[in-house]
Image 1 (cartoon, rainbow, N blue to C red):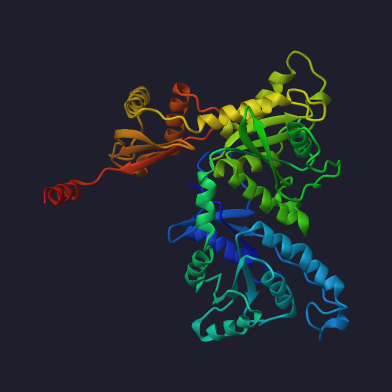
Image 2 (image 1 turned 180 degrees about the vertical axis):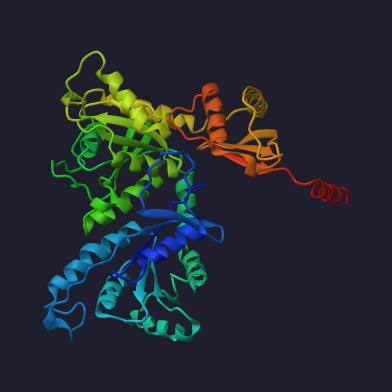
Length: 468
C-alpha cells in the first residue's frame, strides 16, 4: 500500500540535494508509469528501503544572504534579521510538511554559517533530522563528516550521492528515524470515515468550494493565486456520517513554483492527497484542463486514491446544447488515464450543484470496498482471455492459471500466471477495462498484480514438508 511518510531534502544550493534525490528515487525504487501520456512532475518520487516505502521531496536550495557586518556573529545573532528571516520562511515550512528531514551539506566545504543557521531552526522542531554530509567521494575523506556532529542533530552520515557511497547507511538511519510514524500511520488506518482532499491549481476555487460545503467561511478566500498555504482539515456530518474535508494550497508546475512558502505548500498538498480516500480535482472552467491539472491527476493515481473531477466556475461559461458534452470530451481526452473518474460541473461561488459533490464523492468512496467473489473473478478472467488471448514473446506463451481479489481500499486483484514478465502493460489495461465493464468501480483505481506459480521442485518440497 502507498506510504504516507514524507522525507524532505533541505540545504543550501549546490550541495547535491537533487543528485541524492535522483539516487534515492531512481536506484532504490524507480518511478515508472506504463500508461502512455501520463504526465509526471519531478518534484517528488517514491523510494523503498528495508520494507519501508516513503516519498522523497527535493525542496530546492535555501538561499541564504548574510549581511557583511554579521560574518563573525552567531547565525541567529541580533543584527542579522534579513539572514534569519529567510531561514524561518523556508526551513520551518519544510519542517512542518515532512516526517523526517535530511539536511544535505557539502563535506568538502565543512560546516558553514548557513548550515548552522538552518540546523538551529531544525533543532527546535519535533522532527527527526539527519545530516547527509555529501561529496565524500572516497573512504580517505570519511573523516570530513565528523565536523557536522557539531550541529547537534540526530545523526550524521558521510555520503557521496553521485557515487552512492554511504547512501545505504543513510537509508538505514532514515528507517530508524521514522520511529513512531508506524504507530501513527496504523492509528490513522483504523479510522474508516471518509476523508476528502480538495486539490487543484491555484485560484481554481478550492477554498470557495470548502466554504460552501461546510456552510461558513472556514478558509480565507482571495482572488490572489496561492492564498491557501496549509492543508486545513474540517469535519462535517453527511447523513449522520463523519466526513473530513482537507483544503490544500494550489499545486503549480515545478518550474513555476516560487521560492519560499509556496514551494513547500506543494509538499503539504501531496501529503493531503496521501491522507485522503477521495480527491476532488478542482478545474477552472475558464481555462479547461491544463498541464498542471494533468500533473495533479498523476499525483492522485500514484497514491491509488479515488478521484472526482470538479469543473468549477461553470457559471462563467456561455453555454448552448453542446457545451457540457464538449467539455466532457475535452476532459476525457486530456485526462484519458483516469477515464473512470466522474465529472461534476458546479459554481462554488453561486452554490450551483454543490450538493452533487459530496454525493458523488461518497458514492466513489464506497466503490473502494467492492469485493468480487473468487469464482466471478476467475470467470471474468477466462472470458477476457478467451475474447482476446495475450500475445507471447518469442516461443513463450502467457498462461493465466487463476485469480482472486486479495484486498479492498482500493481493490487489488492477484493473477497467477506462468511468467509475469510476459504481461504487457496494454494487456493489463485491457484486463482492467473488462473488470470495470462488469463491476462498478466508479472513480476508483483497480490494482492488478501478477505472480508466477512455483516450479515443480518447489511444489514437491512444499508437499514433502507438509507430509512431515
